[in-house]
Amino acid sequence: MHQPPEIAIVEQNTLTALGLRTILEELLPEAVLRVFDSFAAFVADTPDMYAHYFVSSQIYFEHSAYFLERRPRAIVLSAGENPLLKSVPVLNICLPQDVLVQSIMKLRSHGHSLARNHREMPPAPLTDEHELTPREIEVLVLVTRGLINKEIADKLNISLTTVISHRKNITEKLGIRSVSGLAIYAVMHGYVEVDSI
Image (cartoon, rainbow, N blue to C red; front, top):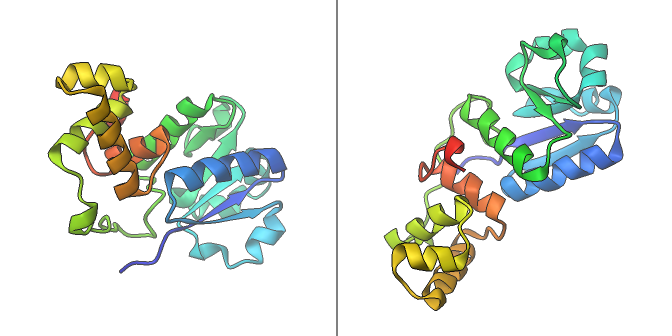
């Protein structure tokens, strides 16, 4: 059994920090998230234990030497494109939530995995009672592609009640309630490609 990943958010703007924390908690319920409102508070908390740091661009620029040494782990929070940030992973915090979630998943798929702690961690195996059936996987894939229950029923040639039952089973088995959370699960387990959602 591996330890859950620890992720730091180093951001002085309270609303930005809380918003990102909420999204990451939904996407990575197993992760331990800590928020720091200053670089000094972050450094005082054994920063090298974190798998990743989401750092405000202001703090990043003020302490760039520190973060450049830890480049694979530092993800800069930016309010748009900045030519000075071309060589580091950047997350545009001004994007709509669904686009922001996709950006986080793309960071993950390009080697900036939010769920690994300096080495590749295999996904925790599901026990038999938590394994999705082939039909539930089909429903999961269609949900992540944005289809509503009626469209899923029509596509799979099953009743609307059956679709609702499958969705209920999926959320209970996985413990994931949101579509964005289901999407990250589907990507992590290879059921869908990031670009297809």
